[in-house]
Image (cartoon, rainbow, N blue to C red; front, side, top):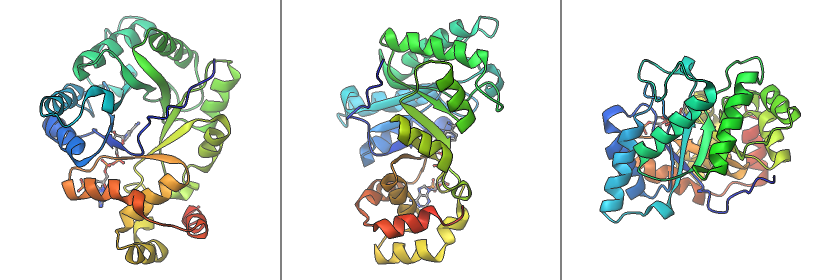
Length: 278
Ligand SMILES: NC(=O)c1ccc[n+]([C@@H]2O[C@H](COP(=O)([O-])OP(=O)(O)OC[C@H]3O[C@@H](n4cnc5c(N)ncnc54)[C@H](OP(=O)(O)O)[C@@H]3O)[C@@H](O)[C@H]2O)c1
């Protein structure tokens, strides 16, 4: 079955990790500042998904947005990535855990479907395992049942993706990875995504790459564009085809991150940034 690439995918995702009891207020603030894509996870250790849902509800009540304006993305996280606050019965089989986790996410987010449902990370760093195949099949069934429009995988290597493809299973619409400039901004995985019509979502674009923010070229481009080095990085990410994430808690940074899309970088400048560290 062909994977539809949604025309409605926003240009930026607002990430809700590590917000704890500020999750509701910061989600609502991000929507007020103009974000229309929200990334979360049913992983209480790093995310407060129910708080994100409260923020969405507040924004709906205030007339800031409607559900139809939004792209909502959440994740299934294996037992190993969770603390004791589990969204499923850990003694159940993996397919049941996926079914319980997505049902709980829909309740947290106050919706009957999400736009994207992501496997937070494969079971092993070594390759795509039988457990991943079982979870992926359950996620595909959830998609077929209308609980999510699209599917994604996160924290994957090229090896994971090649093995997933070789298994004959459906490929994801999204790959979400931490993006290190020293690895050519995840060059291998991005190339696979480009070939397979997969949208690459990049996170930690700023925090994984402090050297880029100090780089003379990036600083010179920022000065020329009356912008910040962070904005140059986000604009670069977009121009090379990434869907960037930001988890800023600062309203000025929220506006700057969205406004980065107006920066102008030449093809040569983009190539130079791409080659900076790797
Ligand atoms: N799939 C996964 O395993 C995974 C892992 C990590 C993260 N994520 C997702 O990605 C989202 C983003 O996480 P992240 O790792 O990229 O880190 P982040 O939470 O976005 O942190 C970025 C840092 O950059 C700063 N920042 C943002 N915009 C800025 C700007 N315009 N100027 C200067 N500083 C700026 C923020 O500080 P201020 O708050 O002061 O602006 C913050 O300290 C998370 O919330 C989560 O949704 C997914």
